[in-house]
Length: 100
Image 1 (cartoon, one colour):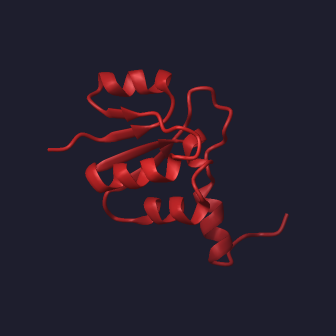
Image 2 (tube, rainbow, N blue to C red):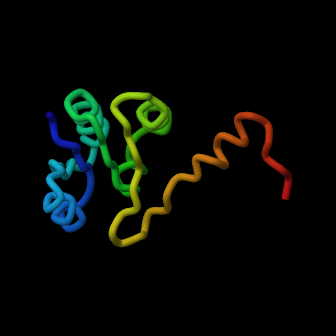
């Protein structure tokens, strides 16, 4: 069975590697290609928020909404890049957003 893949920084990746996850640290500009490769070969793809922020939004959305492989955005170690608020995005798309 193929191993899950983590796309993110080396430091966080060290912890994921201890759990048997294959770790990849994409170079700047290669995030989309790394995501496509991971999705083609892994049953589970974990993407750090920092990497997710550098993937075009429609591409990341398609990956996260696909039934397989399961693709999940996880917090980055430094916490600098905020997690995407998928619930708010879905609410806006469905017209459920309440004005502030």
